[in-house]
Image: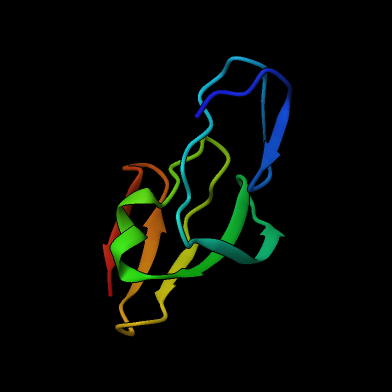
Length: 85
């Protein structure tokens, strides 16, 4: 979605007219600074796992927990992949 004003979502700023990603049910429940970026923990529904971010400053060790299925994934920053555990 595009907005006519600056938007701050999930720790990221998006300029007016820039595409803001749909996060669906995903919520960041923890964020801390890592060695090369931010380690973020997400929770939400498994149907929204494909909406997990791959930000430049998202660090290895970030995680996702699907509340409805118990699925758990970890992020690896060099490949920008969410890997099921």
